[in-house]
Image (cartoon, rainbow, N blue to C red; front, side):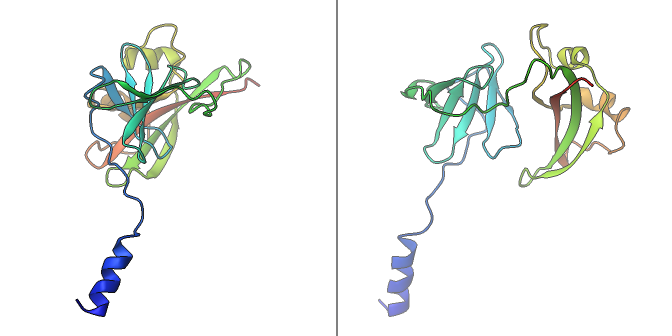
Length: 183
């Protein structure tokens, strides 16, 4: 073995940590649908229980959160759905706290690169919570102040409201709900 080859082999032994690639679907959580947030972790939301699951790139499992994103429920095996680590009450919430005085909703259409999921642009759009509830089949109790992936069924209605040409093949789109203080 040459010195160069030995050096290359020794350098590769302390490369960066290998991170686990997230799956497209969580087989252990059949009611989960992928949603995207501005953070770096892939996320799913259970359509029945409303629980949120976030991919843990380091350990290759998902962290479970209650529907508000404030209470950690533990880590789970993405293929089987069984709990692999207990809840950690010291974990910071993954969703911002919405103060009661901040109850005027505002929606933004954000578009992301299909290749690397980086934010490309965003545009405020005039929508109401009722419109969001009907488009995404939410209950009346749901605040509709979250992020929602845009599908072909919402594309036609959104095209009337925004200046950006919506191309579902070129970009991933998300409606992001925010709450602003009333003035």
